[in-house]
Amino acid sequence: MVKSTETDHPHEPPIQRNPPSSRPKKSMFGRIGHKALARVCHNVGGGLHAGVEIRRVFETETMRGSPRQRTEMARIRDRINGGDTLTAAMSGSNGFFPPLLIEMVEVGERTGRLERVFFKLAEHYDQRVKMKRDFIIGISWPMIELFIAVLVVGLMILILGMIAQGEGPPAITVFGLYGTKGLAIYSAVIAAIVGGFVGLIFAIKYEWINADPAIRMLMQIPGLGPGIKTLAISRMTWALAMATDTDIDPCKAIELSVRTTQNSYYTGQIDFMKSVITGGGEMTDAFQQTHRYPDDFLDALQTGEIAGRISETMEIMAKEYEQRAKQFYRMLTVIAGVLVFLAVGAVIIAVIFAIFSQYLGILNDLTP
Image (cartoon, rainbow, N blue to C red; front, side, top):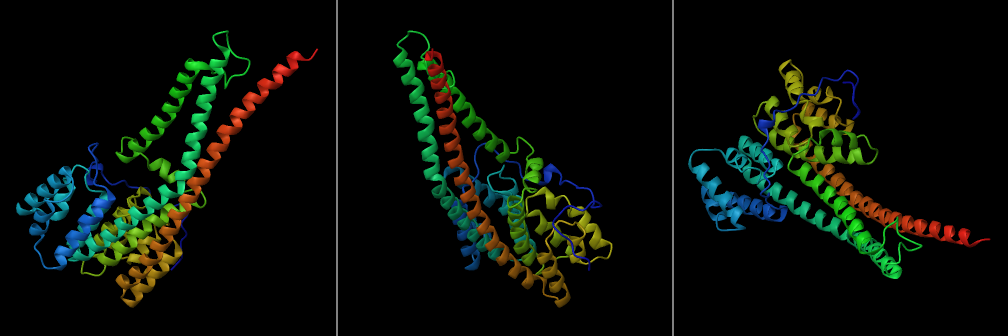
């Protein structure tokens, strides 16, 4: 077999987007938090492990969590009682459950390993909670410094206006701003920047804008791009391990596992990959011919196919990629902290330069 690299191939098949209707729509009314979701997955997995019927498990969950959570659990219970699958019941949550959870629940239902899927998801969301906590701790001090720097600049603007005491603009200002009016303008600019940043996060989270072009651009950045791909492949490998540990046909195994990447860079190739399989190709051929997967993954998959142990091989790869994903999150924390420090330095330097240039101007005017 000819090995591929992660780079795009000039003759690769065109991207085929999954229809929007196939993805659960997100709601502005909130999605269950990772901490609560980890508890739910632990509870459901534990109930199934103990032999409790799925309907009874969710009956118990209707008495836990927030009012929205209890309502959603009751709705899932009712839909299961009505004959729906758990996947279908969760898909109708109007975005309360994240897509990854729904994708993996479908894998579990189709493979008969729902208990194992929930335990794995519980571990995954516990890790997300820990990484989020570590990220916040890592950037908390730089953010405090940035807040102090912004606050000091605002106080300088106000104090310069007080020194002038209504006798016209002071000799030295902060970018032409001084007094209460200058502080109001400064505060409005800061609020606009913060509001725009928060708005962008919400727009991406609730899919008001298409973030795919931006994500694909980020994937071309050295260091950042491989990390984003690692996160996607980390989810895909353990989904593929479970999907191939049953009698599910290769086309469905590929579809279920690749969809868990939640990245159009990979999901856009699902139809092409299935066509490779239906055309007589092996699973390795389907992944290799997209030119989107790293050599170590392809080598492991090919070895698993030859030995007839794809599931076991993918479990090993899943653990390896999970470790890489953790390292990437740690790297992101460091990068975020550095960027905030640079922002603090930029604010301080800009203010010092503005004041110093005005001071030099005053000295030049006083020179005979």
